[in-house]
Length: 299
Image (tube, rainbow, N blue to C red; front, top):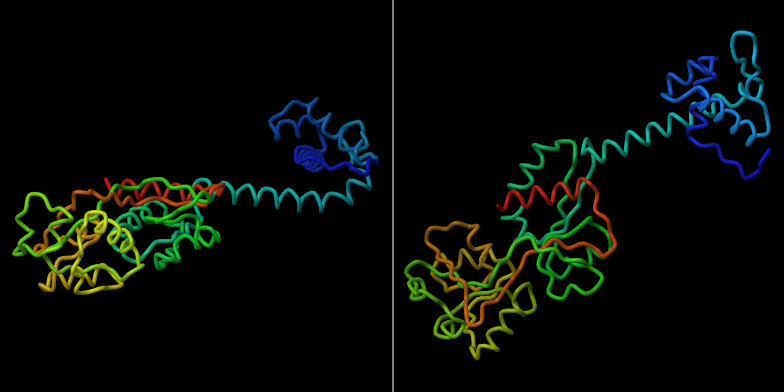
């Protein structure tokens, strides 16, 4: 016996077919191969094991004692292989599976509902788990592989992640229809200095980008309220407490009839929303399908 010998799946399938059918021709028909191919597989198996598995009689092949001892193990191995193949097939065809993603509550509220509904209708046996997190936890969820991917706007993504733009967004000012800025054809950063504004807390989300851009434009912002959630800023603005500075996509998604969204210019600040994955981390078929559903929902 060759101590380094490992039977192949094809050899084990040939052995099982010959054991059950007792004839090379019948085994070949079941396996969709030639009779000589079955004969060669059995011979290779016998040589590797160092023992004869079948004795030839006048009408059929008779299993030896070694074959009788092997058969239950071979059947179990092939059942496990078939089960594993079925599992992979179901995952590949989205008959089952799981998708996990990281996203901030602000983005999730306007990006995910339509995509989740459409994906659930197409692939009802695939679970989608949403890991809603604070902006400062976003990258750690991805790098720690707690999720398959993230949807967001990382400030400094670094070389350890890959970023694929999902949609282009810009910083904007949001105000009531009766606000002085509402009728302006163009709103510049310099225009904000004359009006009280609402935005997120220092160091949180887009605030560093807002402060840096305002400083670049030579504007001192009169921040009258600082919030943790953009949804809070929106209702404050709707209540007349001041204009808000935030990404335009979120403000437009609210579709509040009393609010006007004006993309800020001079400078115009891009704030892309992206699919973020850990570099070298391959996405499953289910994750790729969900991303495609998300893109379709945004068209």
